[in-house]
Image (cartoon, rainbow, N blue to C red; front, side, top):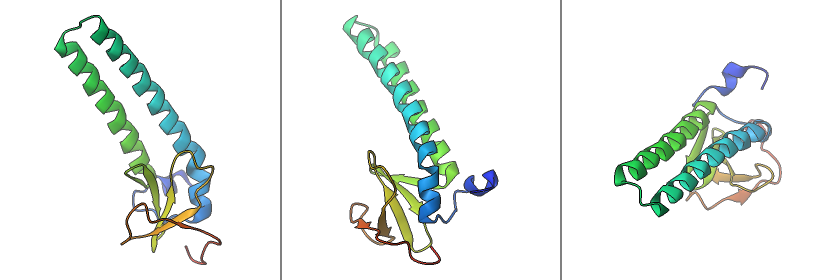
Length: 128
């Protein structure tokens, strides 16, 4: 990925190598979101224990939702889809599939298969 514009494309077709190259950025974005959401939820629990008003609790719920939407927007702009805990990289004939805490992208799923019907990739097919 020599060109930043190349990765800012929601319709991008990923090679397995490219999916693995972007994984550190995906992990960083996810960790930032996790940290912020954890902090918000910790504050919310403390407020609940202190008997805070429902409006204060609801405000934090909205802040959590905004953090998750912000994360989702960033991931989508990279061209990565997220579905039920799986990160999907469209390769033109299906998806490369990654799920936390796997160390690398190494699974394939067909477009028409259930998201959890992943196949271990032995060798990347030429042209994908």
